Amino acid sequence: MTALTLSTAAAPGLRADAIVIGVAKGTKGPVVAPGAESVDKAYDGRLAGVLETLGASGAEGEVTKLPAPSGFKAPLVLAVGLGAEPEKDAGYDGEALRRAAGVAARALAGTKKAAFALPLVDAADAGAAGEGALLGAYSFDTYKENGKDAKARGGKAPLAEVVLLGGKPRDRAFKAAVERAAAVAEELNRARDLVNTPPNDLNPAAFAAIAQDAAKANGLKIQVLDEKALAKGGYGGILGVGAGSASAPRLVKLSYTSPKAKKHLALVGKGITYDSGGISLKPAGHNETMKCDMSGAAAVFAAVVAAARLGLEVNVTGWLALAENMPSGSATRPGDVLRMFSGKTVEVLNTDAEGRLVLADALWAASLEKPDAIVDVATLTGAMVLALGNRTFGVMANDDAFRTAIHEAAEEVGEEAWPMPLPEHLRKGMDSPTADIANMGERMGGGLVAGLFLREFIGEGITWAHLDIAGPAFNEGGPFGYTPKGGTGSAVRTLVRLAELTAAGDLG
Image (cartoon, rainbow, N blue to C red; front, side):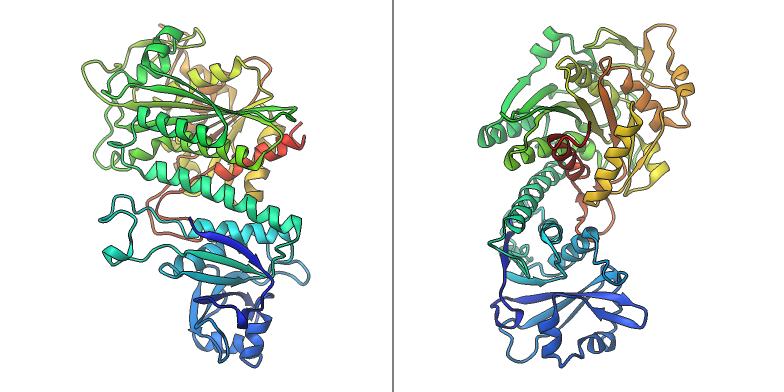
């Protein structure tokens, strides 16, 4: 993991491989952002002009490299675009800093040490820049030749050390912000690793074992229900989805408890370690990335561990509903009826609508503990991708204020989200002549139908929200900002922020 430190040193005298500065897009050309004054001075105050000559504009994501001035102990200056210059005295928002730092960290792969001279006004800015740098430096090389030894295979290792200039190492707020950034980024990157791990190595039992190791390392309580315990407990949804696979399902309960907690937040994650669609087999072209169908469980797992590392004054319970959805002679068929953990029966009309089945059992298990709120996270529907695209997740809830709070928390930490409704008229489409409810309803509005299905398995009086991260969970395109190709760790930061807000009593 990339190291992250604060320093009050001046850029010219710092021994590093590169100095990173920010450049904004001004009305008359590029503008050197605050934090880089000493660098600009070394160019006789003409750095903006030099950058413009080199083609820089300050646009978001833009990278320009130039030799460091004479007398600098670092050989390279890397100018990264921050986007539009803010209004006077407004300052740069955290997401602009986060993205710029991520771009710079990616551009500096193969470098040992870089000093970031970005516009850090306060501790929050330092936290955002640090988080962006650590997320941008992420690399998944486990399955490359010689493992993570990048140099041995001629590749570039991730940036090894980030030094934030302008930070205050002895200031408690700055120190806390950097420590938080490191904890959240490290756990989010662990979630990315899980999502990127191929399904032949990450089946339900393997995921559960990783959770057990993390629980031991972080002082968490853990309970793992295997197929026998699931059968004894009546978890028909999870068992039904996993019935066709040689890898048996698991339900993992991961608990962080604070002695000062006044609230209890339950997080539930969909953990389909591979989704073939089951008997309702996915067509060619839709199977290749289905190792990512456990992204919700990875996000929940990471958020619980992060809450423990941060010592948040809230009880957080994570439920990982793990199964592999495969076709075989023992697989659940369209037309089968499953008796869920709640006692309700579900007619399975499409075995590729399996995520809602495993979530239903885990949601009811979470409800029995009567938490103050439940949030589930899932790569649940292609319909949500059609509605919101590849970078935005949908938020549904049985409480409008809670939905709004989650949306605002996501925006605060830099995750794109959008509030979605739960139209009551769509519920009728899931009526079944055979069972209490069917797992499919109207085709149009399928993401909302899935949310209505899940609502059926929430205990009475419990505040609940559903995050459909099907779009942003896995990036099939090129990297951007601090987001890599492959697993992204979507929703981890939102869940951690929700836990912090719950601990502070700001969610009711």
